[in-house]
Length: 212
Image (tube, rainbow, N blue to C red; front, side, top):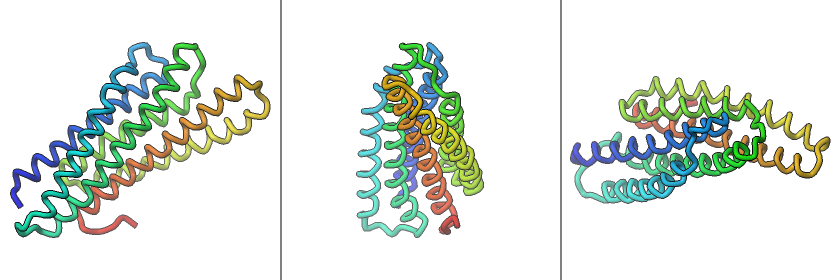
C-alpha cells in the first residue's frame, strides 16, 4: 500500500476531527452564555463533516479492496478509521443539537447548568488529544483520554440526578426546560463515550491489542 495514500487518509481524518472539535468548542462557548459562540458556524460545518465522513469511508473501502499487499497494521488502520469517522460525525451531530438548545437559552436568558459547560470543556480536550494520538500513532495518549471519561460520567450522573429530582417541583414551562437540559446532558455523555471509543481504536491501531 502506498504510504502517500495512507498519509492523505490520515490528513482527511485530522481535518474532519478538527472541524468537529471546533464545533465542540463553539458549543462549549454557547453553553457558557458567551456572546461570541457562533451557532451559524456549527451549522455550516455539519454538512462538511458529513461529506468528510463519506469520503473517508469510501477511501478506506477502496484501499481495502486493492490487490497490493497490506500489513496487519494497515488493515487495522483502515477498518478502524471507518469507525472513527462515524464516531466523529456523530459527535458533530450531538454538538449541533446541544448548541441549538444552548443558543435558545442564551437568547431567552435562561441559566444553563454549569455542569454542562464543564462536560463540554472536558470533551473538547478529549477530542483534541485523540486527534494527536491518531496522528502520532501514540497509544499512551489514547490511554490518557480514557481516564478523562470518568469526569464526564461523574458530571453526567450528578446533573441528571438533580434535574430529575427537580422535575416534579417545577411548573410545566420550567419542567420542559429542565427536560431539554436532561437530553443535552445525555448527548454530552454520549460524546464522551464516542471519544473513549475512538481512543480505544487509536490504541488498537498502534498496538494490535484491545484495551481491557
